[in-house]
Length: 451
Ligand code: DOR
Ligand code: ZN
Image (tube, rainbow, N blue to C red; front, side, top):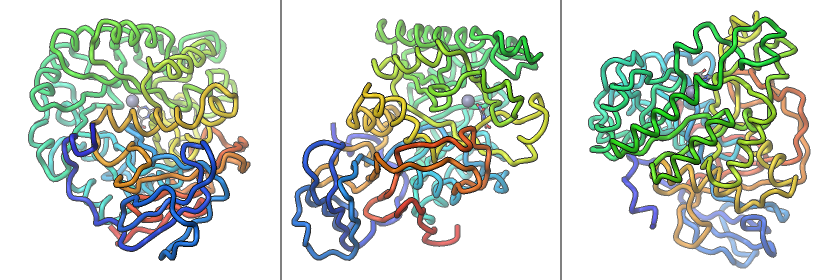
């Protein structure tokens, strides 16, 4: 399948004119260093003479070259909370993290439940030219869980919305979810579910377990997530449309997704870096930065998610990058808003857990952070092989450059970084979007035009 077999995106900013070469880079971290040549936004050689004259040159020093990363779950807060993130600042955080395409959730203010809002997100990202920001449309109007939005109008709008979700909230009414699946099938769009049975999570702020009991925090049971995953698998079986599980967090969810796939049900799933790395023991500090939905779980959940990602039961990594202002985080744990930053640390975390530990290689990272997510949303032009004739959406990674994660030094407008002070060994150095350098030496580009 080529990328042009997928439904088109909306109008794209023109690719960078001119030539760029990436010298001494190792494709997928394999083999001898080569020089990649890019002309007018397209890869024209993966074995060029390193002395070829070009407009721009990046010295790769043997670093790892991967296809540009794709994140199908972020929150960029525009419109409505531009004080915490905008399309531009979120694009810069994405580029710094090695991403060339992200999907921003619909829980903005106003909610992305109409074509005009989706188009505004898409066009702003193209004016900025730092990352392709695809709007996710909401499944129900105003995220109220009652009335379906016009999937068809949004899918055929200039934003070409291809994914719908009420993320932040669950479509808990099974009849509404059934109708949504039937409608989505006709439009061939993806539904992504924030799996949370709300009657089981009233007032809940932490994983239901020993830590929450000890700290006196109201618990969020695994069953709240798993009951919805099971229900959606059955609905997808009977009404035949694709359904995607956002931020899988429990061992039971892994088992259910495995069962669904075994039955041939078109269910896919993502896991976040924080659910792969952190556990609810972090809550012992009572620090609101660790409040997130679904909550951080226990060690066996973390380990089950890692195995499932390695085995392909969980399809991909998605960050659920959720910026919040300091006034919303630096308060009592119960009052802190749920959500964590993720775009600028995700590659380093995945490299730490899987590559540096020897459990997987860079080809696999390309699969779970670029190729699979692009396939799940049927996105053309991203998650493609590094080969002649392909759009130059690329990320260059230094696997031996230690750095310390600090919220205050991030491109994001917010600082709710749950990895504060943690040291990582892998760093994104360069990101390229259709031939344009969107991150150089860890510094993201400025927008083409103030959007
Ligand atoms: O922790 C979360 N924060 N989970 C969600 O589902 C929504 C997100 C947000 O919008 O802040
Ligand atoms: Zn969610």
